[in-house]
Amino acid sequence: MGEIRDGLARKRIAVCVGSGGVGKTTLAAAIALQRALEGGRVLVCTIDPARRLANALGLETLGNVEAHVPDHKFREAGLAPRGQLFAMMLDVKRTWDDLVARHAPDRTRQDRIYKNRIYQQLSSALAGSQEYMAMEKLYELATERDYDLIVLDTPPTAHALDFLEAPDRILDFLGSDTARILLAPALSAGKLGLKLFHLGSGYVAKTLSRFTGAEVLTDLADFMASFQGMYEGFKNRASAVRALLAQPEVGFVVVSSASPRSVDEALYFHERLHAESMPIAGVIANRVAPDLWPGGGALPEPDELAAALAARGVPDARDLGARLARVLAEHEVLARADAREVELLFRSAPGPHAAIPRLESDVHNLAGLARLAVSL
Image 1 (spheres, rainbow, N blue to C red):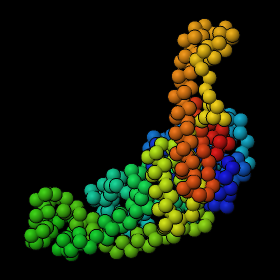
Image 2 (image 1 turned 60 degrees about the vertical axis):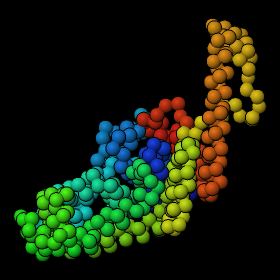
Image 3 (image 1 turned 60 degrees about the horizontal axis):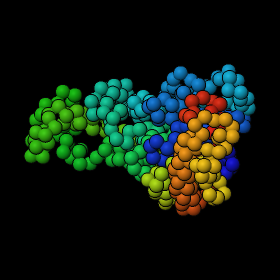
Image 4 (image 1 turned 180 degrees about the vertical axis):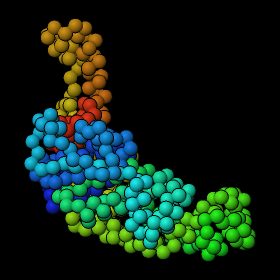
């Protein structure tokens, strides 16, 4: 794997980060496969709902529990790993439930939180939930399992800071002093069947109920009441996760495509990781258009291509030669543009680098992943 392999050689955790659509899932699997082939006991964890990781590993499905990639799958791909490869796909809702079960003082409080409609939205659809639970699951795996390497494929984010800031936003919501002040009468009541007047006779609470409805405020009040006494446990756990990410045994791999927007986002993320003192193991430029005419010389003219095709008995050589010349010229423009962006990315983000050429087809099995690992 060249420089990237060297950057991850002494790491126990690899976190693949980057914007959506740059191939993080497949590259995370390729990194994990390479270490397993070399003799490591490796787990790759994805948050990808499209289940591409399962397909690439030759598995039918993945769940919230680690699944061992069977030996016969490697044999079918012509591979002979010296180690073991495991894979899983994060179930955000189940991970939230497990976290609540860990911190709830008793089963009654636990069930009360599970049934709350605010919690059901928080644990499945609220922005930031995926990122927060990805970190929670990573901490669990790192502290309770014995893998030589854990590779985390992070959620696609619209903004580079979401991955680092989402846990803080969720914790701010759980520990919102403003909500507690507004809902203080309801919190002190501590009952499930709260009436609207229990939410306070204050002007603000009454005004809010007009817009949100009494049921929403009741659910919110019960949610805040249920989490009383648990917030510190969540906060301490999040702090432990943040501390884990800064450890030398962790390596962030920034993944980008060769598009200007993706490169800008990757550089911004790289800068943020550096500012947060997060260890960066390398930068990958994925799906780069290869230079089909290296050396910078003049491209062949249509007549030259037509003559070469005709000499080999290809029918319609003149028309085909003209089309080939046009396609080659268009591709070279794209390849040179990609090369400029990749050069900017690597120059601005020093460290181990890898440029992965655009493949002719999607990676959908272990053999394809192995070829991709070689490209790394």
